[in-house]
Image (cartoon, rainbow, N blue to C red):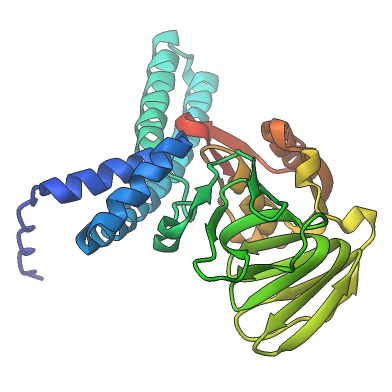
Length: 338
């Protein structure tokens, strides 16, 4: 049976100067080490010319594709190393074992893990900022929290990986482009508006927390009164009430107890029977590197716990033991959990 020869691959094209600049910015963003000054410089660069913003979008897309390929290679490498170790153990049991072979296997496995890890260092899947984040006036990086004092006696406390833009019009308020923010308007004379997704929250001398992650918005009223305005309706929230909405609909208003209140400002992540996949996604928002769940069937397993944000590797160890999982750690903060 004959087969036609495969078509030759197209020659590799060199990046032009603009593409190289965009990729340099993407690498810096993915490292999780960007400063506020870096963020300001990036926004100025992207706004300078439409071609800059387009080049940055293209570079982000290419980086994501490279990262996905690297994760697949890393997973294959772990499996290969495990198979090699098992085979070596069998040879040792049947015909003796040469210590030099053990060192060779360890070196090969380590080299492969290092190569795979280098390819994904600081490039967490799904965590690179989108084009909308370039509009931000204030932003935070991985694991960073920041408080901003705005005009009118309004305070905004920003959680990790959060982007906020100030309203351009006369209405005092912010656009929560992504992430999570606690807004205190208890000393403000005028109502304050927080736009997030398809809705907006109007705080009246209130403290509210608004979360805009994965195309879903959650509004929690801590104190005072707040109105949520959405194309599907208008709902008023009072202290310790919470409302979730997406692009299409509002969910039912719920009362929240102490165990259901957001805990990130206290330095903790709190989960009560939350699917493991969602827990991993949340941990990845705070932790440099990337935790990858290797078996999709595990994503639905429930997790309950209260984990310190500053000790998320400890939290991963607790999850690994409680759910009887196995973890493989690679360079660059990559953890394969399965």
